[in-house]
Length: 374
Length: 259
Image (tube, each protein chain N blue to C red):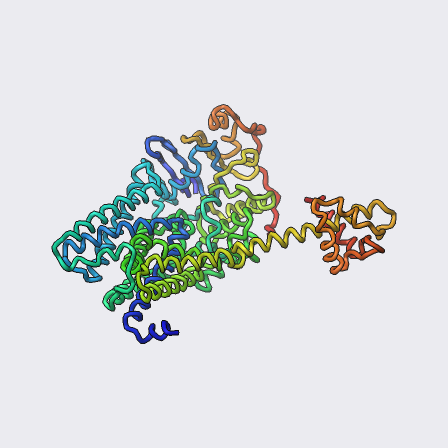
């Protein structure tokens, strides 16, 4: 309750929450496109590649103005993406290796520059290392304004070119056959991804930024099969984990923001993986169990039919012991018989014996008939 | 329409690195022809279609569709890619995928509306999938996926169709249904080029055939070029199939599409 109240009254906390919500919405929705395209790790390369951009921007301008740093990050992130694309296209190095290469080289260079900057006799240099793991508490209104404006532009472009992006994601060759310049659309989409990443860097940090792109999308995909809903849900998930993580870390001593946000997103992913209908693990178990039960019950009905065929009277009762010898899971015979009795397909005949009813006979013939056809 | 070719390819050459995949291919197809493209694996059948459509870079050659370069004729061309070329777990519905066929005429930014969806439903009905519009594509069988791709191409209402293995992995009923569909397209004066794998059905389904193995081995009416000698040349001596003595292409019993 105190935190909720503080969220509305405390200036710092409100700024932090707003910033985190913005980055969550933007990276959640745009991350969905990257994930559906099978390019989840491109985000990781972009965010790591952004680090030297931040450092260089600071070295050149001695300014820590959010717009300057974000611009540097975006340019470097862009360069990194370009490098990945060029390496993949012009050499035999595969996409994932190119990603790893660019990621580590750019990140290493960025770390080196950060060390250089820390040795500078300049009081202003402190704080750049927050870009490594993120620091929500350091968010200022000026930062949030830059984030919101860039994010709004990115989302607007996403909505405008929705149709083109969907086509590119699902079937790029077909898109090209229709005359759409897929390379240009690809560049546009990647640019949006770069924007989504750079507006989250200060809060989440370059190391874990890709998680906030991937996790909300992965969680959202579990719940729905409609692209619009996946993107919306990913935006909501992104905002939720962003705000929860940022507020937690801002109100707790020594809790790094990036990792906290990522942990919050992870909770959403785990819950979604386990409990989503259809795609969830639990739903899968439930289906398997139910199928097994149905199959076992059908098996008992068939066995009873097989036994009945050996008698002139098809409604002759058969000992449950005989049925037990006919299956690999004797213990399941009795519950199966009870299910069949509830359906009116079998009836007890004296002690420990069961017989088919008329309805049961029809069912059993259908079952066996189907098998012969197949 | 003696000299008016729907598809006119000259000297088309495609190379991946130093390896030629297509070498100096010439091909002229008249309007209203239903043509099979056959050849062994790696013969460049898919590459030929992609090169014609401008989807892969070409080293040399020229492609004309109705006497104009492909980029100017996009509205008259429809492409059915291989079914396996997309992720069928993509979160979208059958109607959505078929509606993509309208994107070309729709242009940038504009969204498909009632009219586009109506056209998509019409095309779905033509392939016997009217009841599947709201299904998620992940729930489709192979044959149904193929029909969805065909419907998407039909929506385009093009003049020239390029289809990459539309019979791959479909059951006998669907195969017959697709053949009927192709023949209906031909009756409507459309030109259809189909990458095909099943040699025995070539004389039955198609009127023209292109025998391809990196180079063009032969192309023309099935009765003339679908010969043992040409097949042997195409398949490097190991002919997987002996064609009957030349026979005119038979009409296939028309069968309505059923789902």
